[in-house]
Image (cartoon, rainbow, N blue to C red):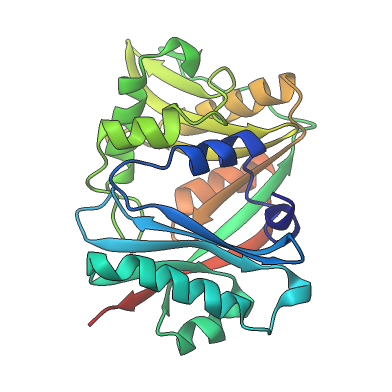
Length: 282
C-alpha cells in the first residue's frame, strides 16, 4: 500500500480491500499479482486477469508500477515478463495495459499502442452544493436498495460508455464479487436516485479513511439528460463528507464529456492522467 500511495496517490484502495483482493481473487478470471522486493521492501507491483466484463477475449495488465528510486534497473520489465507468462496459456488475442504518460515510450517498445486517455481528478469536500433532485425523484442511500437494481443501472449505463474494450457482458455474479461485496464500498455513502420507484441513477463510493474514490456514477440510458447522475453524485459526496471524507478522486475517459462536465461544475481539478494501451497477440 505504501508503494501505491507513493506512485499512484489518486487511486484509492484501502488495506482491507487489498487483502480481500489477494485472499479472494475474482473467480474465473485467472487473476494473480506479482511484486518485486529489494531488501524486503516492495518496490514494484502488477496484477493481471482475464476481462470478464466484455464479450471480447482480453487480458488485462493492471497498474504495473515501480518505486521511482528503483526505476531503470529492469524491475518493470521483469514484472511484465511474469505477467505475459501467466497469461500465455489463455491464448488471448488482445492485451490491455494502463500506462502513465511518461511510460508511453516503454509501452510502445513492448508492443502496447496508446488507445484512449483517462483523466484523474480530485475534489476537496469543503463546500458542496445541495443535491438538486428533480421533481418526482428521490435520493436514497444504496444501503437501502436491492443490489440487483444497482447492478442493472451499471450494466445498462456501461454498455455504451467510451471504451476500447466494451463492458457488454457484465454478469451479476461478477459485478457482485467485484463491486458490491468489496469491503471498501461504502454503501451508506453511495447514493441512488429513484424515479417513480425505479432506480434511475447511482454513484458508488469506495473509501479509505478520509479519502474516497467515486467508483461509478451514471444514469440508465433512458433517464439521461435530467440531472439524475449529478444529483446522485452530489448526494454521495455529501454523505461521504458527513462521515469524515475530506477529498474525493475520480477517473474518466477524455471522451466522456457529460461526466467531465459534471465534475468540472462541482470543482474537480485534474491531478493525473493515464493511457489505455493495446497489444494484439499473434
